Length: 165
Image 1 (spheres, helix red, strand yellow):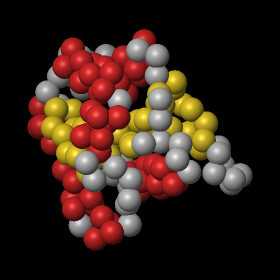
Image 2 (cartoon, rainbow, N blue to C red):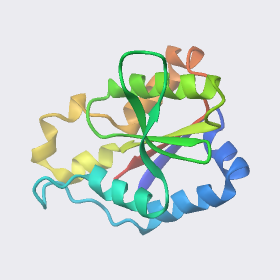
Image 3 (cartoon, one colour):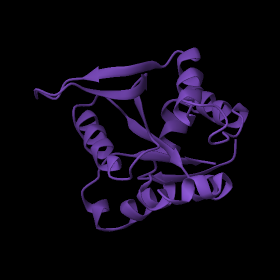
């Protein structure tokens, strides 16, 4: 699978140094996963593809995280102090991910976070079926824009951002 990446606060580099086996595992997962073709199979999304890939590699899915609120929170995947969030819907959900990662990082429950999203090439390949909602969808390009803008003064957790095609 083709992907673009962005290392925020040295997230990728820290991942490679602190968790070399997990880093290799995620890189192999990305390289060995076939490109997702939007709309080929009803009710089957790119998230299903990644769920299967991470679960078969021993990542804990939907790990509950306690933030002392009345809302049940969780991260999409967790393994050895690394949390992964996948965002393929609206770009506003990145902010929820930022807060989760920052709280987990502050509480020393994670060393870094990984966000997996789409890149603009994916939308372009999907054609007219995706164009109507492209402006509201999450993408690595929007994520990078947030992280390089004023939000960077607030987000203190190292992140490895991956935009899949």
